[in-house]
Image 1 (tube, one colour):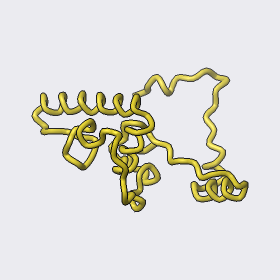
Image 2 (tube, one colour):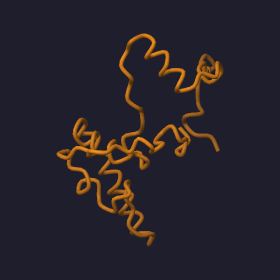
Image 3 (cartoon, one colour):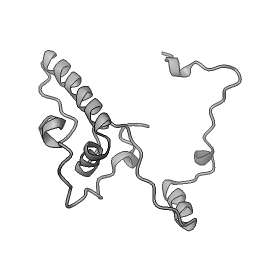
Image 4 (cartoon, one colour):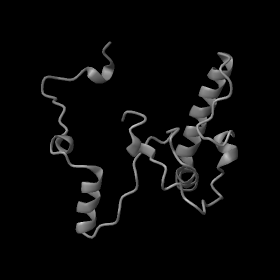
Length: 125
């Protein structure tokens, strides 16, 4: 089944130069460090259920607009999940709704650095 993302004009061509050159994330970080630039933050979807506690807390503090959008996504999924009889769905492992678990005021003292996050490939992006 084709999606709207599969539709492209004849002039468009998908290219993946870093993948084709076998450049890893670590290679990119090394190049950035070699240039004396600060390490960039990890990229991810604002509503990613694989965020660790530190990422949720940071999102609530620094991007309350996106945090609220993530909470709205969670609300919608939880509502539909309950309607289907599949229990209570949450984007975190806290068991609480995002707005209750992370209000933007708290700092995470001990990060989840061992959490693979987006580098894990769990979400296939």
